[in-house]
Amino acid sequence: MRLSSVAVLLGAVLVFAGGAAAADDPYAAMLAPAGTCGPADEQSHLDSGTAQLVMTCLTNYARAQSGLKPLQLNATLSTAGNAKLDADVSCGVFSHEPCGKPFDSVFATYLQGATSFQIGENIAWGTGSYASPRQIMLAWLHSAGHRENILTAAFTDVGIGYLPNETFLGYAGAALWSQQFGTRAPGSTTPAGASEPQKPGVKKKPLPRKKHAKLHRS
Image (cartoon, rainbow, N blue to C red; front, side, top):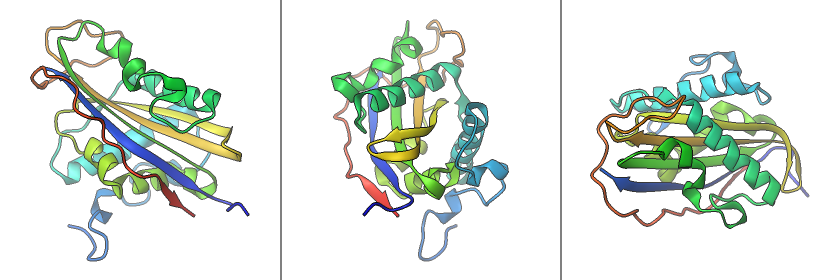
């Protein structure tokens, strides 16, 4: 018997290349109070523009609680996020590498001309009340790997992927979400829609990808 509402997360992926909370919930203070990012933060069916703005607001609120600079919403990364979610739907899988495509393939435009960079990705999907930006962010904050991406100080840009009202893995009315994180080296050509990078890491080989167990909420 299927539950009426479900939220699922897949482990965060973090790749380098180049250059006060409630007593029972240490991450409660990282979630913006209801309404801080507008009334849409608890709604499940949003237009793309609203979804991007609300999730970016929630993301930057969490960063602010840790003393981190806000991320700039980046159109190129949002396109990358939607591409990843489209591939998950078309391939019928919930994965950072749908149909065997490399995790970083959707970042190609963002990384064009970069001499060093750092990128990361969070993905999630849910139905019913668990498809809202607030519930997705709550789940990400309570998952170590996803929270690590959100609170990575080096990131300067974020893209928000969002596909609502999908039939996904047998569930109708599902919403898929992604956060695409990035920073690029100064002096490289920035693609249209991308913001200028700051403080990139030193060039090095990609670190091993971090995988975490799926989380189910009902």
